[in-house]
Length: 299
Ligand code: PBE
Image (cartoon, rainbow, N blue to C red; front, side):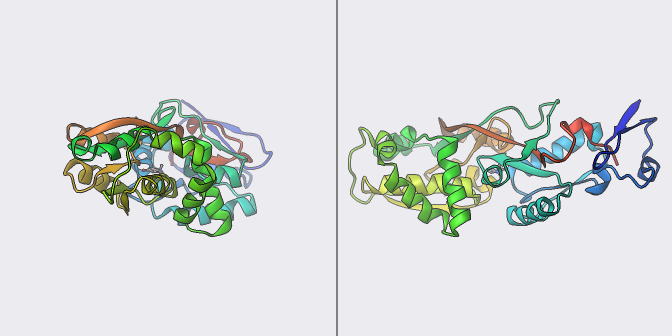
């Protein structure tokens, strides 16, 4: 079996025969492979995230990732590592996704090709509701069912919040004020209510805080009283399934939250996509001369 060793900078790639596991064999003339330079480590995010679970699957599936670890801590820690690497033009491999501000701040980032399709192709973000919501709070159900927006809308809120330092909720409120014609489409045919309470269950990422807050402000225009509760992914599904929460705009499918979705799928109502064109995967800076997960080397 032949293995391609990728080298930093302009040095030529060395083709090594055999499949040695001793990484010191693979470094010659002071050249270090990207895989060694990043210490066979992918910089991940929170342990409960779908993308973290999916990355653990990728490590199992790809021979090129054998012996690798995914460092799980937080999105903020990942972003700090990314900033540091970009500043020094150092190699880094992160778990990345769209919509996210990363790609607005660093347009020179690329997804590594995923030949085995572990991360899927295109993801959508779904709206789910508890059973009984349609009968008990039909106006809320109708509005939630009509909510949908674009990657660019969500990304604008995330980036604006990042740049201005204003909380996502405040920027979401601003977005609603600036985009009333879009909001009106979600409100179409929805009758006013008098303080009907709705609990939206969300994940803690900016993307879902953005959608939950945008819908909250839209619903308030019709007289709803809306609470947004950020919880772990697992709790999102559990609370909609057991009826503690009314609805969620946070599930990413068909890959990211597949395991959770499938274990609860008989216990909630799927209202379809509220955003299409999302994506998850392994992401690297464009200055790294690799294109595919298969270009990495086992430890
Ligand atoms: N994310 C953002 C989440 C869903 C939204 C991709 C980081 C996840 O992996 O679960």
